[in-house]
Length: 229
Image (cartoon, rainbow, N blue to C red):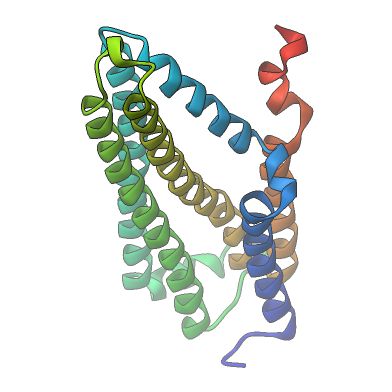
């Protein structure tokens, strides 16, 4: 179909299934409760509860600023990647001529090449929107920190509700940040498609194993286990 082989279509279907399936597993199923991200969400709750008792919340605003800076870095990187993808589209003929001279001799039509480049362009555009929205949500969380009652009201229902709002906003920002970072990881697997379908399948599997290990592996969660404290 349009220059793509059956192997290409199977590999692409595997890529979509791996990305979407992993996202559903870590965010929408009971399995996700054992992930590093979910456990850090509980520590966000602890953070905002502790924040209530502080007279000066400079440390909390510094934490929020560091989260914003990290998100802004990834958003800027996404834009650079989008620009690089557009450059590849403009130089399709030159890049294809270069690929044919490589030892493994990649050969594809210009239409197939541009379709694949357009695909990775969409991935980085998606990542940019996720990081940009995450940055905005961290801004909202910072505003909510500024609106929290003073420490002498820490035990009031109003103060506890304010802490929960900050925690929920920080959770939401973190969730969108994780989705953007997940797009970056799977973009690395997508690059395998520029070689052939088999490399695409293998690269996607490798990315899936790495991201799953980071969320579910014992090494990733060791620092949060109470028995190791």
